[in-house]
Amino acid sequence: MNPSVGQTLEKAGAENFPVAPFFVPAAWRDDLMRVYGFARLVDDAGDGDLADPAATATLLGIEQRPPATPSDQSGPPSPAEVAFRLALLDGLEHDLDRVFETALRPGGADRPRHPLMRALVPLVDRRALTPEPFRRLIEANRVDQTTARYATYDDLIGYCTLSADPVGRLVLAIAGAATPERLALSDAICSGLQVVEHLQDVAEDLSHGRIYLPTEDLERFGVTEADLAAPSANGAVRELIAFEAERARTLLDRGAPLVGTVRGRLRLLLAGFTAGGYAALAAVEDAGYDVLAQQAKPDKRRLAAKAAAIFAKGR
Image 1 (spheres, rainbow, N blue to C red):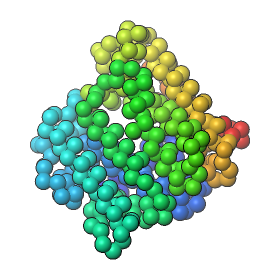
Image 2 (tube, one colour; image 1 turned 135 degrees about the horizontal axis):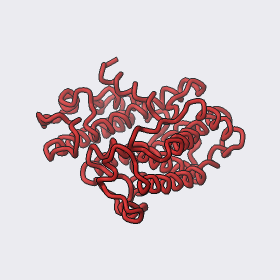
Image 3 (cartoon, rainbow, N blue to C red; image 1 turned 60 degrees about the vertical axis):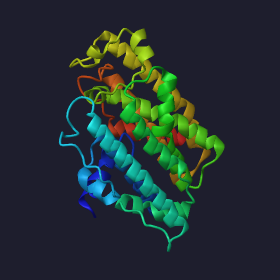
């Protein structure tokens, strides 16, 4: 395996929920990891976290080189870094086009260049997937290069339709369980998971110049950017995080009945995804809603117990 590919896939263990757990059929597990590999590759390109960005650019046929300034420096990326990231995302979208062309014309198309993109070809062919959810994930990372603040909660949820909802839709497609009702419930779960992740990552996001807490809510609770940059959360910040956590819980509650619409190992998988969100919320609550002092991480035993409860109840 390409070392950079291995580093990308190894990040699956750091997620709030099991990406491809042992109990799902081997074919599903492989396909889920293919989707995760794509999503992680795109996120790393958009965040400046690629192990070897210059090599990735060369692989994708991008002439632009990364700037000399390291991409992991504190603060927002430089204009040169933003331009390079956008070029990478364009290159990945072109490679995505090659994925679907190869799936449609195996012998006559220009094959994808990146190994994680090539891995999608059999998945697209076998599951009859469409480009839209993949393109949305790329577009979410383009948005990250130009948008660092969200005026309203609706604006933030609009971003989640790009950054999170497509993943749930792909999971249902892989399982052959995508229906309009299930897709709507999945969108609620995925948006809830994204909001929870934003709460966990407030300090880290701010160090990169981004704030995913809606501006209208910051103003409502009297929270300033300086408050978010403090080593620990004051009372106003804690109240704000508690408010946003309740919103995330509402989304998870709205989507959780999805679990009861399926059976077997898919039911257990979806219960695990949903439980990951609830467990992360519990970790935020256990921290007294102080997400600045340290990142709140879900307890694996609590996650397992919650997953079992959701599995049994079907919600």
